[in-house]
Image (cartoon, rainbow, N blue to C red; front, side, top):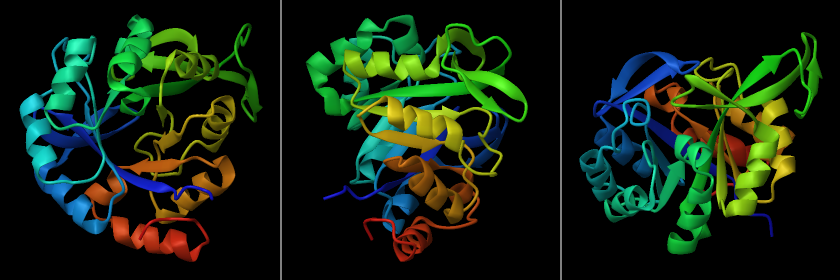
Length: 267
């Protein structure tokens, strides 16, 4: 039987507050992480993702005190990322109440960390976050796509989307899957915060490239956008922030809409 699709609110946290930006920039305050976590759990969220979005760029550890507070008010799977560079960082986060750890910059800088985390904590605990951005022009050695603007590929970005890596996103997800990633958290930087819908082209390609679950992130502005990414990309889960933080909809309303539209969902 096909597994139920998951709806996952995301808490991007900076200095102890939930924030939301556009294309990973121009961030604005969106509320208290503990209050929002409790609200989303009560609305029926399947999981929760907490990302300390400035930990890597500031070279510091994830805010464990905030993670602990959030963990006390929810009883759903809880993924935490930001600033995880070594096994000890991941252990601290898991001991603070997280069920899974998400690594992005840490994985690019040290790909072996993915395997180390899998060996110690189990594949189910290891989420590799991939922040990808379209690059037009020369696609030599890259997975090529074409649209009205021309040939392009998708580059993996690190440090909160501020630094390019030269890595091809499609090839990178295959590598991290082979190293032990249990799940891919895919964010389109081009779509992030626009509320114009998920990047179907990118998401579909990533889902085809790997056999582990993929979470789509970036661009959700309505329940219809979630329906589109489930139907067109066959993604396993849809992550969203703005639509929930600014109360354009609620988790339970979105899930009822999806179920009515024929998506297998937990109500």
